[in-house]
Image (cartoon, rainbow, N blue to C red; front, side):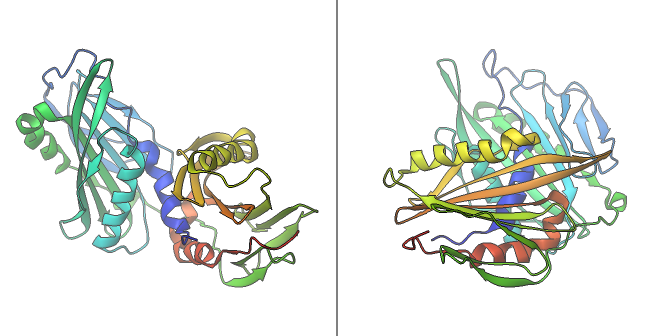
Length: 357
């Protein structure tokens, strides 16, 4: 079974919604229009960047969590996406390159002829990645070039900037458009400490049915709702919103292929989570291999006047004739503080599909 890197996938879910719908090419690749350059400052004061004054801005930010703005030229053929968010963990350039590669692949791999280069170091604190894909509009197909850059600022904030341009105009305008990215200024002084939930030390747990074992936070509450034919256990933080859940049952319909695994997981997440929370936004489920699939997502918890952004992931594993779902959900602003613990939880998860329950 593939090891589960929970923290990386969860973080990718956090920013996967940053990129816009692809350029529309309503009238083909009209010449990209560059207006007078002006300075755009986000209302959060987290960043400034120079942008043509005739480009439209679309703000999809989450207050206190993430500043996301898409800038699009009047023809709809060019776009710049700026995504800035707090990030208080150390990260090597190699790690940032892998993070950026995962982000771009998750967003664009479904497009025809998608191809990405290996990430490269960018400056002293970042990485860059070039990619291409085909965009179909009606009966026409256009090749798009993309350039994405990730950078850590003063060990406090991360920025991801992505440029999308049509291939037939790339050589003409890329230098000017990419030059706008050099004007980005990130204001790390605006970030204050957060009350992130801490997972803490872990302990080994093996279910009485022997179906699964996993390392879980020592101080979390455990509630076992298992019954004949179904295992269902939830581990929850009594002092916060984080929780972990494992559910398993026998599959009497035979082995699922990748397509069926994906549809099963999509239905499970919608029934168990999506239809019960506010602001649900999920990435498409994907098959990690022939026996495992995953789906990451975000939603919001409202407690009185307080809103808490949540990030989660669900894995589906089929072992022998048993299907097991592993679900973990944490506050979005707690991912960085608990990255190592989240990955240890994922690595520790083991399933014994031959047991009876």
